[in-house]
Image 1 (cartoon, one colour):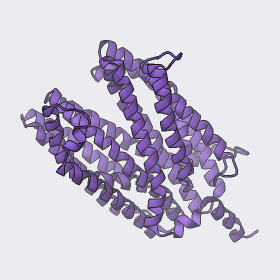
Image 2: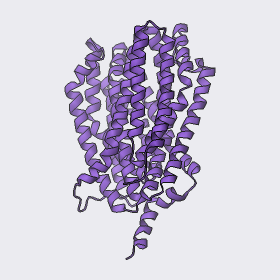
Image 3: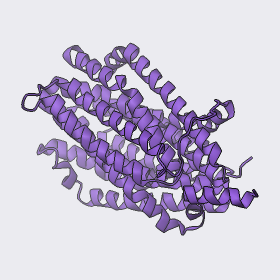
Length: 458
């Protein structure tokens, strides 16, 4: 059997030829559309969770505010960071026509997910109370934060496996199945969390623990469906553990991208926490206004994420096939699409910022503070989308250091610049302007660093 007869079924099974030869922009948009819908549904699930917890009282709402950044950190690391490393490794293997390597990489990814989930569970069980106390949690709010955190992180295995298996499918170019299941999981989370948290008929309400269980059960069910699908004949890459032997080089192939990308997720959370602490020094009104603006930013991320993860298999397969020029073209095209989409949103909030703010409050002072933030940050939205999208595209190439350095520059700029502004007695709008300027610097520096990085395989 010659090489051509081996490679032909691989191409047919994985859609490899389509990702290597189809026009870039239409393919990118086609792959990103279903993920956008699923990610927006996930964002709505988070908003619904907040609404449920708000009905439980101020202490519960404060508790969720303490624990939510840590839950988001796990989501970002498992889906966007390590998930990107998984998709990248599999896409590069398929681009080189090696279906067996891709299958073995998927099994290694599952092992990584199990170990990472165990770490998150143990870490937050042991250190969660101290972390939430350090963030300002006291009394009933701290106790409820620990309850919510322990419940969510007890189900960390479900979150990590769901996002890892979804990333395996995305690495093959299959965006539809992970997106449909992501949408279904979001709907299930809203329904289960509402019923268990608030109660319905004969089912009692379990409060904040019930809301957390909604997430655990939704991801657990989704994980089971993904396993069944990946074992079926419908999957482009069919999981098989026959003859499996763990190999250090395959772990490293995933981790050299995914582990470094996790630094970027940590940077994002640190940036939010530091900036929130700085804004809090200007009073409750300023903090509330910033919170409204930050909610909009939370909805922007799914757009950049959707285009970015669509670029990962396209870039990865092109790199695996030795088509470096095409891989770079995909990256710049993806970054441009995300930038244009977020520029439109940024322009709207600059021209009419109160349209968004009035969805959450009628307080004139809070609306004014939110207006200041949205006008100052809106101009940075397209640069933020551009940089975030290049971060994902770089995962496809296996070279993610440049975007991580770009994120570091943004973090340092916010931390040092914000500290200097607060210490010098500057007014709050200057801090908001710093946030927008940091987005611009992040996008520009990431673009320059990606351009300077060689993507040719060793």
